Image (cartoon, rainbow, N blue to C red; front, side, top):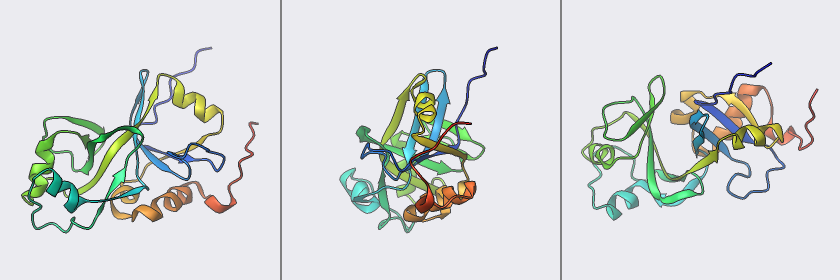
Length: 188
């Protein structure tokens, strides 16, 4: 009997309490791509000390009339921390975009930031520096080792919920309170 591959694209990964890796302890990661080659995601509940206004100033881009200036740029993960990632809704037409789910995309090209700076661009955005990545089969193995819980993602949690409330909101999708979650999970 062969098992069909699991596709966790547009799912949340919830770090189990026993997660010791400081990059992922108490984290909520949104999976943007998952296939036979591995997985790519963004940690969506870890604001950095950098604001969107500071990022735009350092890139020498104007930041138009949108009220994003004080918004924190997220620590998206430990890989390529010097590279920016824009998770957004709607998808739009950008130079380097990965369509994640209906109406949600991940863009890495500068044209999206230029559009945001002009007061244009996607209606809803999350900016992150760095991403989280897993090689082929690695994420599936970590899930089997009880490192993660998974649940289908909701756009409202991504784009309308404050960063510090996203993990509890994702846990609520499972009907579980994170404070009551135990490290000791078994398999039936």
